[in-house]
Image (tube, rainbow, N blue to C red):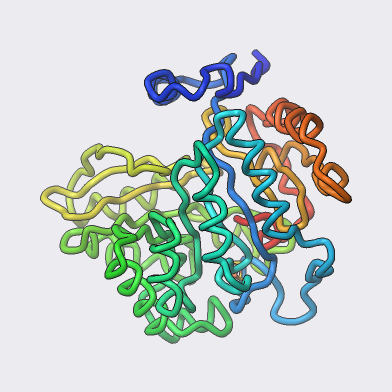
Length: 349
Ligand code: SF4
């Protein structure tokens, strides 16, 4: 059955109805005739201070021209439209979002929109200790940090320039500021970090963080081969359970998106899995993406994108913007089949 999109506007902004829609989605099996979108991931820049091997080349990156990047005022206009559809949660991402000047200003502008829900941030963590207090004060509630290894040298190899100790300082600063528990995203890659799966899992025994294991995805322009490095969810889970015993289902964190969440026995933290490849969750995906240059995307991989810039420049055309969200949800695939032509930093992975 082809999904027949139903935006949350159909539920109104009534929190009880939205909660009922959440429950409906949680129990859904396979393609349905309902599509409930609640989160907009906003990429504020395609620039990054890392060059992760699976994301972009070391040199010669095709950065977006500056005048194509949305201004904060344009982003806020889009967010206002999203809220009108009941899409009230916003995740700020990049590239590396902390490279965008005055990100706290954008968070405050979003926070000021009537109906704005949760604002969260996905970061590589390198600059987080500098901005954590300001972002928290500006209304950013939660942070997700990417960290694929606990070994400093391997971290530098994967990111081609990262400083693991500095990222840890950022995580602690975010927690001290009140944006904990921090989620840590680990892309599992054979030949790099398979032997550290249990170490990351062990961290959740004593730390109230959520570690989320992500299957390696073959995005266009990745610098490493998917077939060689892919580790399926079943293997990741088996490695954890053979060491620590059976995982127990845990309550989803807010804004968990596609992750399935578990807990080790007596653990303070949680373990999540994002298995976009071996067990796609497209039919329950509840997010849209806005690229830094104003493309509203239905999917990280597949589906289509709608260029919002002509609807914003020279002035915002509110009716057309509103329609663009409806059109974009129609493009959401029941199952992704392609991997697009953009590199991940341009989409806001
Ligand atoms: S994966 Fe994230 S941190 Fe790494 S280069 Fe891409 S945008 Fe930067």
